[in-house]
Length: 343
Ligand code: SF4
Ligand code: SF4
Image (cartoon, rainbow, N blue to C red; front, side):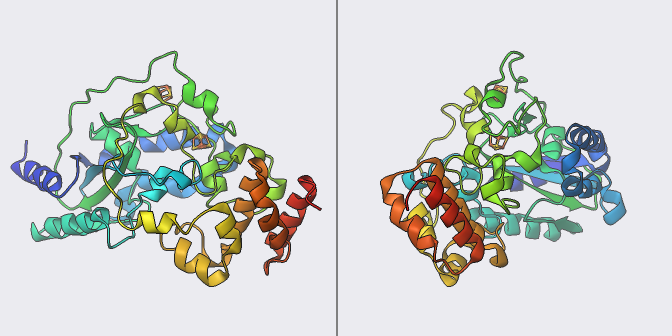
């Protein structure tokens, strides 16, 4: 086994990662089959997922790349603001992929610099990964993908993954110690509010709440899964929260930089009061999946959550939103006020 591979792993562990492995580019080939099966099961996701086939053929885009360094970082240790629980998915609350103030971002840059200092050619993609990260991590023996499609380590599914392509043929795989999901367990499937997770190891992207509340949700009022969104306005944790293999794995011991201050600015009512500038300044830096031109979606999602979990304190904000500057917000607020008999 290469001493360089061990050096790289040890450097990753010193820089804040809990696990690091290295696989060959060819180890991604099996991902093609997995992706084909997913598209076959849910043909409607083809337009959104077809581009992912490139992850199984990295040699086309990166002919110089020989191996993939995969790292795992545990985030199930941060204090979760009470008012955001069940509203915003935990992955997004503790998402430092693009936040230069966070250890996650800084360690990623430091590790990349280290790889370059070794004389390696390196490529990465900090937003969504340069390849299929869960598949790569499983190939490296760093964890196991469970029936809810999340990669688990001994610390549960609350982990971030990152990968770097390098131009040296190296391999460092761990021997997996985690068992598969119990054969009879289907708690995550039964709990999925929209039925998106309708079978083990598969999920219909287009009906997943995480997708509806970020990339999609263009016409929430008429969305067949509108009511099933409950209070979620950005992401969903249900299939991870119900998993017994996650129980006790989140220890709220560390403050996440800036989150306490940010959380004090967020509530369903406060979102409805935000003007364009505030939406951009308060929400966008952290929750960057929503484009500036789609900021109105924050308000339609907030109205939807209010309708699904109505409380009298939402009455006036909904009525006020009937005069919002954006027609989509006005339409949704008017629909909500009729549905709830507020007028
Ligand atoms: S994230 Fe939520 S909606 Fe998506 S598959 Fe899991 S439980 Fe279902
Ligand atoms: S809930 Fe059960 S089936 Fe689903 S991921 Fe957890 S252990 Fe596996």
